[in-house]
Length: 337
Image (tube, rainbow, N blue to C red; front, side, top):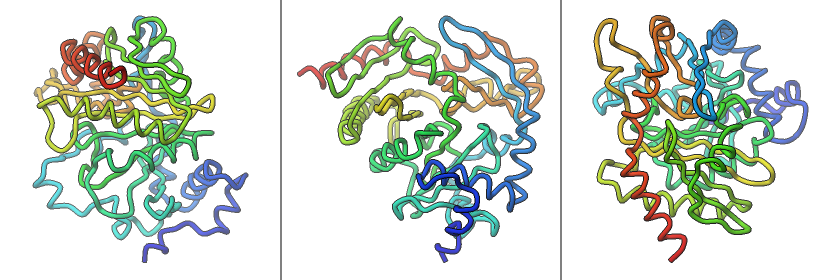
């Protein structure tokens, strides 16, 4: 039954320009837009989304009005709601027209029919296991390199924007779409704190920023996993988590290096999300929002949101200065002991 979900070799050959995985993924999107109405309509509507742009000190934040994302932004992720619905990432529950590319028999690369990016994919594990990153690092960073010619890979924690916290998955999107990818190195150079640097890897922090973060560069897959695990172990020192520390992660492969941005979190959603009437802003920050593209599925929110609103939303969901300094000091100890 699982094999019936796989896109055929003939279809890949028809829609793909090359034999590498990145080209096959691009071909999968072409195939699904041609054969699956939900995907075709989703990408058709993406052409009409509106965007506003706000300038900050050395970076920009865009706000996208994208009504197709209302399901994700308003998703109920409490245990009861999850228990009462079928998992939409399990292969046996996929629409008949949805096809995917198997990745090492562990993951299934699927087209996201409700896109934010010009090319947007969801990569669930084939097995139904909880959304927890620690046991899936090798898969995430291996995929990052394998499709890095065209795409970035990202992860939303189970309480940080994942609309299916019961099923482990990554997402991938157009390589240069999120502003932070082109900004991060200049931001680290201008305001960052270098925690550790060697010929093989570097880890830095950025505390003087709208979105506090940690940044990893590494030339080796095994080393990338090891550095990330050390950072993860530091975040575990926080008392404010249940299954794993709250985080969003963006990963890409550039200049023969893995480059990973991790955003530690304290809250899932800001107060704006829960207010009523004209004071409500339906914005549920996840990796894409932290990457510089804030998604508003309601037009009234897109029209009224201000720079001050953006600052306040990220202030509420991000870690505090005190937590950043605590994590940074502990991380320095792990790399310099």
